[in-house]
Image (cartoon, rainbow, N blue to C red):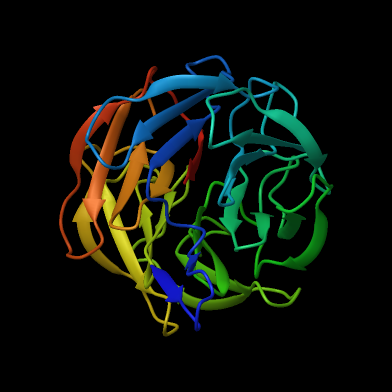
Length: 301
């Protein structure tokens, strides 16, 4: 969504939502079955296979993904030891990532969210699940700070982002694998429980975001599922089941364009699934990653 501002003879300015992309989705890191450092890129304007456009600084699985308007970020992960690395790679050119900072603690199975000015890494494992919400700036290369707590320690959950809040959905302590947590971007504060997914699940749920709704796709409990859940950003409420992925799978990476959600990889799959935001419908297979992999991070521009 873009707001166009014009006053007298001043040049027009576009103010665009950060989280949804208009150009490309990215899938970074993961395992195949060994850890990989691959950064894949696929088009939002045409359904096509991904291309390998660069490398992370470390081959790792289970990181979180964040996106500014100009860069993708991959935070945390397992190398085969847990790391606190925050990697950054440019959207304007196909290039390798650079190490630009550290999370407050080394952890994998991290959940990622993005505001217009900051990246967030919530939850994760070190070695038990944690409830930490870390925040790092997009404007400069710097370490993250601990700015709040989830309602429960969790990992392998899905991350969603509205204009004003971050969401962490699924996983957690049994039997509460369905909790949707919400925390504010405007201030540093703890998350609150604002609703439930349609089914309790864990094992790497993919998160997607439109301008008005959050989506949680895939995962398992314990069997893999193909469910696409949708919940409102404007009101705190439970999710509804609005469609299916083409394959039941877990440890999937999620990406969001302005019109569609994407679920890439997961398990032994290289499939890139796409589903519409404008209507409730099943996903379609629109391309392949360069390699089948699990536990990757998703970004978009």
